[in-house]
Length: 98
Image 1 (cartoon, rainbow, N blue to C red):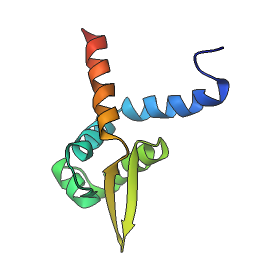
Image 2 (cartoon, helix red, strand yellow):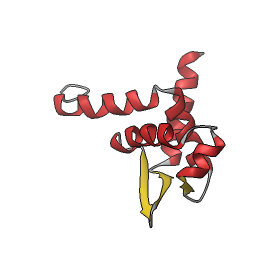
Image 3 (cartoon, rainbow, N blue to C red):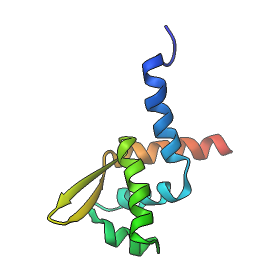
Image 4 (cartoon, helix red, strand yellow):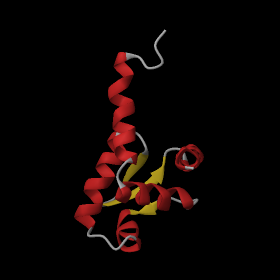
C-alpha cells in the first residue's frame, strides 16, 4: 500500500504550498497563538500588511484547510483549524533543519 494515495497528493501538496510561504506561515502562527478568533484587519495591522494582500494569502490558507474564515456582518474573522497540529508541524520542521 503506498504511503500517499494518488487522490491525496494534490491535497497534501496544497498544504505544503501554503506552509511554504513565509507570509502565510506568519499569519498561521499569529492566529494560532491567540485563544480567540482574530479580525482580519487586526492581523493585517499586526503584520504591517495591506488588507488586500493579506486577504489573498488568507484565501490560500483557507483553501488548503489550515484556516477558518468566518463572515461576521461585513467583516471577516480568522481562526486556526488546529493550532496544536500547527505547533507540531513547526517543531518537526525545526528538527529536520538540525
